[in-house]
Amino acid sequence: MIDNVALASNYRMTAVVFWESAKRLHGSFETSGESVIGNRMAVPFYFLVSHSAELLLKCALLKRGVDQRELLKHGVRHDLRELLTEITSKGIPVTVNTAEIITRIADQHRRHALRYTFLVDDGEVTFTPDPLTLFDALDELLMLGAYLLMAFKYWL
Image (cartoon, rainbow, N blue to C red):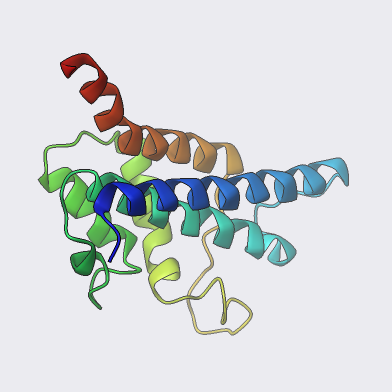
């Protein structure tokens, strides 16, 4: 296994790649005059965002000493709600808006609905919020993973 800081850095960079891809996809919808909200053709956008959120949450936890094996456990690995609970249990502040967004996208992310079954009428509504709200949440999550690096700088 690689050490936590290296893995956290990899997760953070990968999250940014998914996020940048989401921005490009969002931009293409805007250019064509289409909304991503409620648009089944935009579901890949929401998958990119939710996967980015997962990686950013894991990055923040790894930087706070959570063992990477803990993040691979079945009840945790793709559960945004569980990852968020772990973050807040460590006393790390998360705004109400970000917590609400993560909680709202958590079930469809955990069930992999954005990857496989969003076209199946299973009685579940696919949550497709305003992209700018999602981007604000990702901004906050990105900073959770950077926090220790900034704090460490002042200890030297």
